[in-house]
Image 1 (cartoon, rainbow, N blue to C red):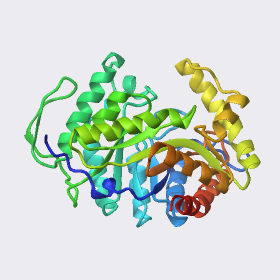
Image 2 (image 1 turned 135 degrees about the horizontal axis):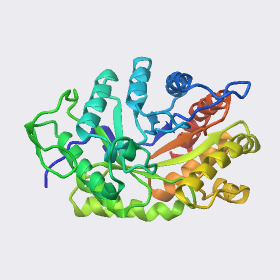
Image 3 (image 1 turned 180 degrees about the horizontal axis):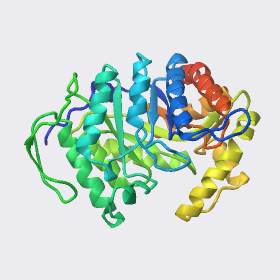
Length: 354
């Protein structure tokens, strides 16, 4: 089969601990909602703080809503790159289905250049669908858009002249896409939330696998990790890492973390439930997910570190990205959570996984 280049760092089994955000709009000390512009400026400070406290990765997920006004995460990541030197930077996720794979490659290869090789991209279908009508895509083509565009992106990663034809964009005929990366490799992951087909697709193209777990028991996703490893072996691919993306919040104590996080979690997920048609959260369901084995990583540094360690071991994963914050949370709590994650949680997890 054709070789699809993957950044050598993606092949490592070393533990990687990151922070993800969707550009949630927070509030100031008086409880006033911050502007979109201030939210974006704050994101740069958050990424800089993440590096300063020892976090390995900082990801920005694409969204196009009032609560998550982050439609150009790669631009914000470039600003963070200019103020950092070590932390890896990337998407969490890029909705490849409603984007142009050529432009995605160009934007992230540009970020890779600006950051001296620290860029990554996580490709996904998108659990939120607001980008499809915004960019003129028909949701009836949801699966075809994803399959074709991931296929084209895999070709672009070879950084050679591309000849490609499909139904979802104009054909390419022997065209080279610029800029090329300095190393010849752009680290690429597939983000999945419930599709076995996407798991196998990640293995086929030699991508790493990022499993998004936002509710329920973490252990129910272990079969996805197993499927990924079996598919890699059957396809003759070398070992690739498995990562986990889950929501959470770190505060000084468990009670404080729950008190700070729950009201904003309830509001955000009640709205998501209304739009998507699932059951809204209750305090009981929330605490069940906060308990050991559940998807939410909320608590003191020690509690969150123990839970991340258990999550990594349950799924045989080597990377964990905490989706921190919720819309409406005070910015001061967000910054404290980042500082605690980097300075306390990260070293604790490394010790527990040693």
